[in-house]
Length: 324
Image (tube, rainbow, N blue to C red; front, side, top):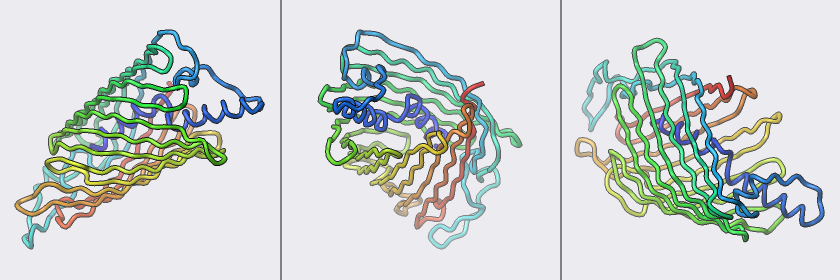
């Protein structure tokens, strides 16, 4: 699952942080209207519906080496023994989680096409393959997404997206399909611009099928961007996330964009050997470019559950060579 999350994050970040770019573009336009000399690049103005845009498209392709560490290379059980309702069970050695270093490739093909002013579509395909350096263990992940974006001159924006993902390790396989629609607006009050966005999504995986509502609030300052988001399940079957809250901080450090995300979530909706399964997860992820050619991300998560079988701590780190 961590590999699937990494791929999805890669897809989202490939074109820059949209909330940050949208708010910065709005702020530059506001300064320009007040007579302040600022640089107004054409691309973001076109992207957010502020200038006439002839129909045109562009492709992007990346093939990037990846080197990292994973505390669960094979998707195994992170315990030697587990207590289930007072009974002790020994996990077979072949089913236990294996930690270690791994190396591989991360590839992405993207397409963005402007239909008219304020209307564009985008799509991407991404795949990742990694092999452990000290074990004969391989992992694979792939994602595909397609979106329609609408950006009005008054800074109201909306999008509709379809996405699918597949992640495979030696002992686990995760596949997901999702659809999501959202609408938002840039808000002009106070010293710096803000944005508020609401969305609805439906997700189907090999564990559950569920519907969620989403909301996020973004604020740009001179030095950083803050994003506060919440998610809640409104319907569903199987084990899935009930609700989640996250805080994202993005800012420039020594001239390089650094992003950190702190997230809390709860999940329920199924049983394990007749016992209710509930979980609480806290995670922290940090992403930063070390140099102009090397990006680094670090993630840690801890899951607490009344059932020891689902209690776990996960650590992951990746170095991605972005130019070579």
